[in-house]
Amino acid sequence: MEKKLADLLLSLHTDQKAHSFRSLHKHLEGTYNILKEWGNNEAICLAGLFHSIYGTNTFKNQSIELSKRCEVRKVIGDKAEDLAFLFCTTNRKFIKALEKRPFYLKSIVSEEIIEVNEEKLKALIEIEAANLLEQFPHLIFQKKRIIRKIKKMITDAEQYLSKNAIQSLYTVVKKYDKFPFSLLKF
Image (cartoon, rainbow, N blue to C red):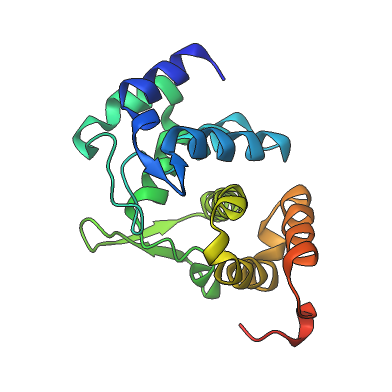
């Protein structure tokens, strides 16, 4: 990771904030590394590195205020910051958004409905997959819930994920799920 990225994250005290039984910094770095390993472009990887920097619908701990988005944008670029912003500030019902076109997400900040194109929605689903897989080993009491989410992701969004993401998701399900994939109800 580039020094300017690490410096920004550390200046936001991500190393001092707890997330899934370790620091937020470790989680963000891990998500970035997974996206990199899967062969995603730099904007998606950087969005993964900052995917909960403004807080999310489940992780409420904001590292930087939304009014300071321009500071993040200067370091990671427009496309990456826009994806990170959408990940943080929408209800994250990315797979549900696939049900009809055009694709819409709901802001948890303003309650407005935000139209997103297929490219952005694919990127957000890819980031969510990396986010889930990165947390999985650290959330021992939530493994069943995460396995259910991963299975739903595979079933409903497989064509929107990279081949490497699908392979990683299947590997986790095969290794940790006690029931055959086809028999488990979502």
